[in-house]
Length: 387
Image (cartoon, rainbow, N blue to C red):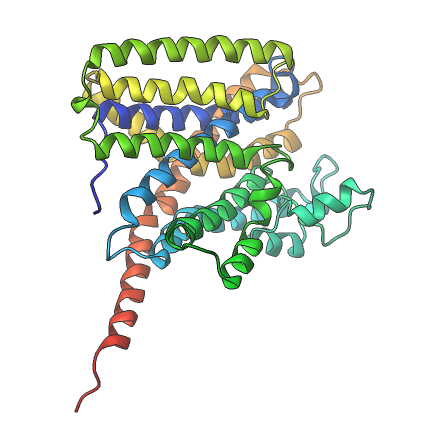
């Protein structure tokens, strides 16, 4: 039976805050490399932001599917439409924006992405083939780059993670709606999984992020725990909630200690599965603690968090293009210009909000229209013919 997964208001605020901060961390991390050198060795800030995004994505998508998949009015087609509209409502306009902005920089000597700003690269990004495993494996085998090796388009450098997310969504959705209900897999199921699962499988142990599929799965495991908890009445139904609060607090502290130790022995290697698991212990430990011992967040704080979180995906998509415009037109010889650094943060955030307002915020409406269309077509097929 379908059930309603209800979170405490402070848990929703917490997840929104984490999402908003992750996007800002990615922006700050990328910007420091050009205008605040020495404050982020090896791109760790932006890598950490990506890691948190994948943990949150696994949690939120898996929790949503657990809630909806047993509903008679929600099918795999609805799930794909939801995911497609969520991704492409901002991603397609971002591809167009990057193409337009990069065309104004393409012939400038300081523009570094001329090779990846071709029409073929744009089309490859449109169908989510950027950094496809075949291209990466050929590079590892020593093959020189070819024009058909699709990478992130132009200054849309963060787009490589969007492709991974997309293929994870398709693989997870097919597993959740079809495979888990079967006693054995048919040849068709194996073929479909082999097709859509190439990217998730490769990125479980390789790829740019080394283990991002497993990071996503870690978030999904936390969603499974939340779902089990809600099916048993939620945190309020737990006996001895005070003991659970202490247990979660100790777990968070232990995860923090283990995370610090792992960072020390690996020189803070972010794309590392143990690092991700310990980060998840802190992140989701805090989430579950707020469920057991909720706090009241002032309304104005909650609304501010919501507004900043709203455009986090848009910020993630377009911030590097804003940064590259400054890097090409106003480069810093010393890679240290605090004024320009702050200017980039402001313009990227304002631009992302405008981008969200124009495009991303409409994804719910687009999904509702598309799902209504397929429902009407499905109903028309089942109507009996007139006598």
